[in-house]
Image (cartoon, rainbow, N blue to C red; front, side, top):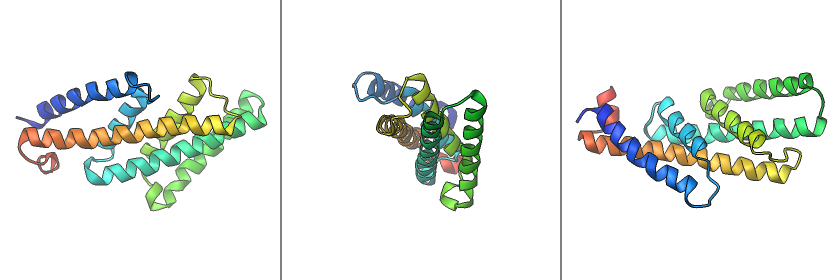
Amino acid sequence: MNLITALAISIGALASVATYLCLGTGLGLQVWALFIGWGAFYHTGGGTASIGKCAVNHAWGAVVATIALFVVATVGGSVAVTSIIVGVSVVALVLGAHIPALATIPAAVYGYAATAAFALLSGVAIGDLAASVQATALVLISLILGTLFGFVSEKAAGLLVGKAPEAEAA
C-alpha cells in the first residue's frame, strides 16, 4: 500500500475516534483544536521530535494569548488599544524563538490562535484569570492530544505500508 492511502486510512479511522472523544464524552475537549494539533504534528515534520516541539510551542502560544487577553480585559479600551496589546504579545511570541525550545513558531501561533479563538468565541470572561486558565487548559489538552493522534496515525500508516513512513519520505 502506498503512503498516502495508508495515511488516509489511519487518519480517517483515528479521526472518528478523536471526534467521539471530543463530542461524545463530556470532557470538554475541542475537536477543532485537536485537529489543529494533529496538523501541527505533520507540519513540524512528524516523528517523535514533533511531539515535544508541538507541545512546548502550543503551550507557549496558549500562555502568551491568555496573558494578552487578560491584559485586554484589564486595560479595556478601544480597538486600537486592543490591537496594540495583541501586536506586542505577538512580538513576544515570536521573540521567544530565540530560545531553542520555543523556535517552532508555527506551532506557537497555532496555540495562540486556538486559545484566543476559544476564549473569545465561547464567551470566557477573559478578565477572570481562573476562567481563562481553565479555558486555556482545555484548548492546550486538545492541541496536545491532537499531536499524539498525529503520532499514532503516522505509526499506523507505517504499519499499513510495511515500513516506517519517515523512511519512505526520505
